[in-house]
Image (cartoon, rainbow over all chains, first blue to last red):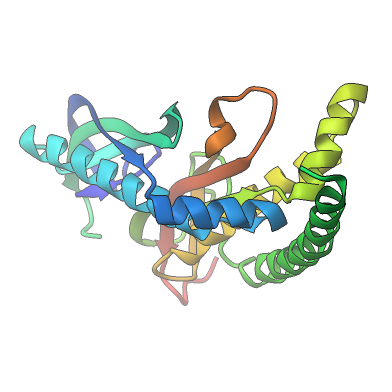
Length: 109
Length: 153
Protein backbone atom coordinates (compact mmCIF):
# COMPACT_ATOMS: atom_id res chain seq x y z
CA UNK A 1 0.00 0.00 0.00
CA UNK A 2 1.48 3.29 -1.13
CA UNK A 3 0.73 6.34 0.97
CA UNK A 4 1.25 9.99 0.00
CA UNK A 5 -0.13 13.30 1.04
CA UNK A 6 0.03 14.78 -2.47
CA UNK A 7 -2.67 14.33 -5.07
CA UNK A 8 -0.81 11.80 -7.19
CA UNK A 9 1.78 9.08 -6.85
CA UNK A 10 5.07 9.98 -8.51
CA UNK A 11 5.84 7.55 -11.32
CA UNK A 12 2.41 5.93 -11.29
CA UNK A 13 -0.90 6.47 -13.00
CA UNK A 14 -4.17 6.59 -11.11
CA UNK A 15 -6.76 4.44 -12.86
CA UNK A 16 -9.62 4.52 -10.39
CA UNK A 17 -10.76 6.62 -7.44
CA UNK A 18 -12.55 4.72 -4.71
CA UNK A 19 -13.50 7.55 -2.41
CA UNK A 20 -12.61 8.69 1.06
CA UNK A 21 -11.18 6.29 3.60
CA UNK A 22 -10.47 7.16 7.20
CA UNK A 23 -9.30 5.73 10.48
CA UNK A 24 -9.39 7.08 13.98
CA UNK A 25 -8.38 6.14 17.49
CA UNK A 26 -9.18 7.68 20.81
CA UNK A 27 -6.51 7.10 23.38
CA UNK A 28 -6.30 7.95 27.02
CA UNK A 29 -2.97 8.27 28.70
CA UNK A 30 -2.11 6.03 31.63
CA UNK A 31 -1.69 7.24 35.16
CA UNK A 32 2.07 6.63 35.23
CA UNK A 33 2.73 8.80 32.19
CA UNK A 34 0.36 11.36 33.61
CA UNK A 35 2.21 11.66 36.92
CA UNK A 36 5.57 11.93 35.15
CA UNK A 37 4.13 14.57 32.85
CA UNK A 38 2.85 16.48 35.87
CA UNK A 39 6.38 16.59 37.29
CA UNK A 40 7.84 17.49 33.92
CA UNK A 41 5.36 20.35 33.69
CA UNK A 42 7.30 22.11 36.43
CA UNK A 43 10.56 22.38 34.54
CA UNK A 44 9.22 22.28 30.99
CA UNK A 45 10.70 20.34 28.11
CA UNK A 46 9.56 17.40 26.12
CA UNK A 47 6.89 15.05 27.47
CA UNK A 48 8.22 11.81 25.96
CA UNK A 49 5.39 9.68 27.32
CA UNK A 50 2.84 11.74 25.43
CA UNK A 51 4.90 11.88 22.24
CA UNK A 52 5.15 8.07 22.19
CA UNK A 53 1.48 7.66 22.98
CA UNK A 54 0.39 9.99 20.20
CA UNK A 55 2.76 8.39 17.70
CA UNK A 56 1.42 4.93 18.47
CA UNK A 57 -2.14 6.13 18.17
CA UNK A 58 -1.42 7.82 14.87
CA UNK A 59 0.14 4.66 13.49
CA UNK A 60 -2.93 2.78 14.59
CA UNK A 61 -5.30 5.16 12.83
CA UNK A 62 -3.21 4.91 9.65
CA UNK A 63 -3.39 1.14 9.98
CA UNK A 64 -7.20 1.27 10.21
CA UNK A 65 -7.36 3.57 7.22
CA UNK A 66 -5.22 1.10 5.27
CA UNK A 67 -7.50 -1.79 6.18
CA UNK A 68 -10.50 0.15 4.96
CA UNK A 69 -8.72 0.91 1.69
CA UNK A 70 -7.71 -2.73 1.26
CA UNK A 71 -11.30 -3.80 1.72
CA UNK A 72 -12.25 -1.52 -1.16
CA UNK A 73 -9.58 -3.06 -3.36
CA UNK A 74 -7.29 -0.05 -3.43
CA UNK A 75 -3.52 -0.29 -3.68
CA UNK A 76 -2.68 3.29 -2.68
CA UNK A 77 -4.01 6.17 -0.60
CA UNK A 78 -3.39 9.73 -1.74
CA UNK A 79 -3.85 13.15 -0.19
CA UNK A 80 -3.70 11.92 3.40
CA UNK A 81 -4.40 14.38 6.20
CA UNK A 82 -3.98 14.00 9.95
CA UNK A 83 -5.88 15.78 12.61
CA UNK A 84 -5.89 15.69 16.39
CA UNK A 85 -8.60 16.79 18.72
CA UNK A 86 -8.98 16.42 22.43
CA UNK A 87 -12.38 14.97 23.13
CA UNK A 88 -12.26 14.79 26.89
CA UNK A 89 -9.83 15.62 29.62
CA UNK A 90 -6.91 13.23 29.27
CA UNK A 91 -8.03 11.68 26.00
CA UNK A 92 -7.14 12.60 22.47
CA UNK A 93 -8.58 11.58 19.14
CA UNK A 94 -6.19 10.96 16.26
CA UNK A 95 -7.83 10.94 12.90
CA UNK A 96 -6.33 10.15 9.50
CA UNK A 97 -8.17 10.36 6.20
CA UNK A 98 -7.34 10.17 2.53
CA UNK A 99 -8.55 9.08 -0.88
CA UNK A 100 -8.27 5.41 -1.80
CA UNK A 101 -7.15 4.85 -5.39
CA UNK A 102 -6.02 2.12 -7.72
CA UNK A 103 -2.72 2.87 -9.41
CA UNK A 104 -0.95 1.27 -12.30
CA UNK A 105 2.80 1.49 -12.53
CA UNK A 106 4.62 3.16 -15.39
CA UNK A 107 7.87 2.29 -13.68
CA UNK A 108 8.27 -0.02 -10.76
CA UNK A 109 9.24 1.83 -7.61
CA UNK B 1 0.42 27.30 48.65
CA UNK B 2 2.81 29.27 50.84
CA UNK B 3 4.73 32.14 49.32
CA UNK B 4 8.10 30.57 50.09
CA UNK B 5 7.28 27.40 48.19
CA UNK B 6 5.93 29.41 45.29
CA UNK B 7 9.11 31.47 45.01
CA UNK B 8 11.25 28.35 45.36
CA UNK B 9 9.35 26.48 42.63
CA UNK B 10 9.47 29.46 40.32
CA UNK B 11 13.23 29.83 40.74
CA UNK B 12 13.91 26.11 40.25
CA UNK B 13 11.68 26.09 37.16
CA UNK B 14 13.41 29.17 35.79
CA UNK B 15 16.86 27.66 36.25
CA UNK B 16 16.17 24.22 34.84
CA UNK B 17 13.68 25.43 32.23
CA UNK B 18 16.10 27.95 30.76
CA UNK B 19 18.88 25.37 30.68
CA UNK B 20 16.67 22.78 28.97
CA UNK B 21 15.44 25.29 26.40
CA UNK B 22 18.94 26.52 25.53
CA UNK B 23 20.18 22.97 25.10
CA UNK B 24 17.20 22.11 22.95
CA UNK B 25 17.69 25.13 20.68
CA UNK B 26 21.36 24.27 20.29
CA UNK B 27 20.50 20.75 19.21
CA UNK B 28 17.74 21.97 16.85
CA UNK B 29 20.09 24.39 15.10
CA UNK B 30 22.80 21.76 14.74
CA UNK B 31 20.43 19.17 13.26
CA UNK B 32 18.81 21.70 10.94
CA UNK B 33 22.18 22.31 9.34
CA UNK B 34 22.91 18.56 9.17
CA UNK B 35 19.68 17.79 7.34
CA UNK B 36 19.95 20.50 4.68
CA UNK B 37 20.35 17.81 2.00
CA UNK B 38 16.82 16.66 2.65
CA UNK B 39 14.76 19.82 2.27
CA UNK B 40 11.16 19.91 3.45
CA UNK B 41 8.97 22.07 1.23
CA UNK B 42 5.26 22.71 1.16
CA UNK B 43 4.77 22.71 -2.58
CA UNK B 44 3.10 19.71 -4.16
CA UNK B 45 5.08 19.46 -7.39
CA UNK B 46 8.47 17.75 -7.31
CA UNK B 47 10.87 20.53 -8.30
CA UNK B 48 13.39 18.44 -10.22
CA UNK B 49 13.74 16.01 -13.12
CA UNK B 50 15.82 13.49 -11.23
CA UNK B 51 14.85 9.88 -11.42
CA UNK B 52 12.59 8.91 -8.55
CA UNK B 53 13.55 5.72 -6.74
CA UNK B 54 10.90 5.61 -4.06
CA UNK B 55 8.23 7.43 -2.12
CA UNK B 56 7.24 7.26 1.50
CA UNK B 57 4.80 9.05 3.72
CA UNK B 58 6.73 10.41 6.70
CA UNK B 59 5.71 12.15 9.88
CA UNK B 60 7.22 13.37 13.10
CA UNK B 61 5.80 14.80 16.26
CA UNK B 62 6.84 16.32 19.55
CA UNK B 63 5.02 17.25 22.74
CA UNK B 64 6.67 20.12 24.58
CA UNK B 65 5.50 21.59 27.83
CA UNK B 66 5.95 24.98 29.41
CA UNK B 67 7.89 25.36 32.65
CA UNK B 68 6.31 26.79 35.79
CA UNK B 69 8.15 30.11 35.62
CA UNK B 70 7.03 30.77 32.08
CA UNK B 71 3.49 29.88 32.97
CA UNK B 72 3.54 32.51 35.73
CA UNK B 73 5.04 35.09 33.37
CA UNK B 74 2.48 34.26 30.70
CA UNK B 75 -0.45 34.60 33.06
CA UNK B 76 0.83 38.05 34.07
CA UNK B 77 1.25 38.93 30.41
CA UNK B 78 -2.35 37.90 29.81
CA UNK B 79 -3.46 40.75 32.07
CA UNK B 80 -1.41 43.36 30.26
CA UNK B 81 -1.79 42.09 26.71
CA UNK B 82 0.91 42.18 24.07
CA UNK B 83 3.43 39.67 22.87
CA UNK B 84 3.65 36.52 24.96
CA UNK B 85 7.20 35.50 24.24
CA UNK B 86 7.21 32.51 26.54
CA UNK B 87 4.51 30.82 24.45
CA UNK B 88 6.24 31.76 21.19
CA UNK B 89 9.38 29.83 22.03
CA UNK B 90 7.32 26.84 23.19
CA UNK B 91 5.46 26.52 19.90
CA UNK B 92 8.55 27.27 17.84
CA UNK B 93 10.51 24.49 19.56
CA UNK B 94 7.71 21.97 19.12
CA UNK B 95 7.30 22.71 15.40
CA UNK B 96 10.98 22.67 14.56
CA UNK B 97 11.51 19.47 16.52
CA UNK B 98 8.59 17.83 14.71
CA UNK B 99 10.02 18.78 11.30
CA UNK B 100 13.43 17.40 12.30
CA UNK B 101 11.90 14.13 13.49
CA UNK B 102 10.01 13.85 10.23
CA UNK B 103 13.31 14.20 8.37
CA UNK B 104 14.97 11.63 10.63
CA UNK B 105 12.24 9.10 9.94
CA UNK B 106 13.14 9.05 6.22
CA UNK B 107 14.64 5.83 4.89
CA UNK B 108 17.30 7.48 2.71
CA UNK B 109 18.97 10.84 2.98
CA UNK B 110 18.88 12.07 -0.61
CA UNK B 111 15.57 13.43 -1.69
CA UNK B 112 12.97 15.99 -0.90
CA UNK B 113 9.91 16.03 1.32
CA UNK B 114 7.03 17.65 -0.54
CA UNK B 115 3.68 18.97 0.65
CA UNK B 116 4.71 19.31 4.26
CA UNK B 117 1.92 20.20 6.66
CA UNK B 118 2.52 21.32 10.20
CA UNK B 119 -0.28 21.19 12.73
CA UNK B 120 -0.40 21.93 16.41
CA UNK B 121 -2.84 20.91 19.06
CA UNK B 122 -3.05 21.56 22.71
CA UNK B 123 -3.09 18.46 24.89
CA UNK B 124 -2.98 17.54 28.55
CA UNK B 125 -4.94 18.81 31.48
CA UNK B 126 -5.40 22.33 30.16
CA UNK B 127 -6.50 21.23 26.70
CA UNK B 128 -10.10 22.13 27.35
CA UNK B 129 -9.26 25.27 29.26
CA UNK B 130 -9.13 28.23 26.90
CA UNK B 131 -7.31 30.47 29.37
CA UNK B 132 -4.00 28.69 29.44
CA UNK B 133 -1.65 26.61 27.38
CA UNK B 134 -0.19 23.56 29.08
CA UNK B 135 1.60 21.45 26.57
CA UNK B 136 1.66 21.66 22.80
CA UNK B 137 1.83 18.86 20.33
CA UNK B 138 3.22 19.69 16.92
CA UNK B 139 3.01 17.20 14.10
CA UNK B 140 4.70 17.56 10.73
CA UNK B 141 3.94 15.22 7.85
CA UNK B 142 4.73 15.03 4.18
CA UNK B 143 5.65 12.78 1.28
CA UNK B 144 9.32 11.93 0.99
CA UNK B 145 10.49 11.46 -2.59
CA UNK B 146 13.84 9.72 -2.94
CA UNK B 147 16.26 10.16 -5.81
CA UNK B 148 19.00 7.98 -7.19
CA UNK B 149 22.24 8.87 -5.45
CA UNK B 150 24.58 9.75 -8.32
CA UNK B 151 22.15 11.40 -10.69
CA UNK B 152 23.44 14.55 -12.32
CA UNK B 153 21.12 17.59 -12.61
